[in-house]
Length: 254
Image (cartoon, rainbow, N blue to C red):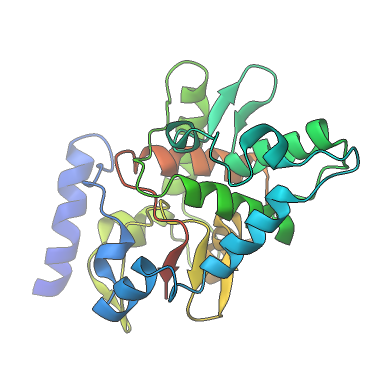
């Protein structure tokens, strides 16, 4: 009875304030074991670096017209601005909120005269991982003013809406009960500053939208497609709620 009361009281207090609070942002890195922290920090030990290397190869690979990403941005992306990378998703008057992955895909189609790739295609995830890696250590800084606010609010609503047969929302695990244990793991805040991440449990790199699909499956809910407006809005909200956290790509997670 006491345990239930301890779980319910914070929620009640938060509801009295009129909203389901904002936690002080904490990277999931802080909850890793020392071994996994060392793995993430060491480029020679971090398995996600293989995807970074693959992304760099694709970055330098000529497209249909002989141009590559490196043609505009330097062989190793040295002309890219880490602050600008850390500001994605950004709002575009023609396209609405633009994620880093969709911007890379747009450049791939426009500048190299290639057919655009499907959202979350392996090559696109590799390119995103490489570009995000170039901004490692830069603080996430997503602007939600102006027209972007609408998409931030839409993503926030998704984060707080109960879904699936389990009738739960993202906020239950990642705000209300963040820091508590679920089986052998500590529930984190679902901060996304490390994405794309290397998942120890399945031994592969994982994109953010793939993670969303996995969470929807856990809640026994019908997922949206990668690159859907719902997931892009959710990405806007979740990046903004983590503003100030350093980019860790490629993060290492369970």
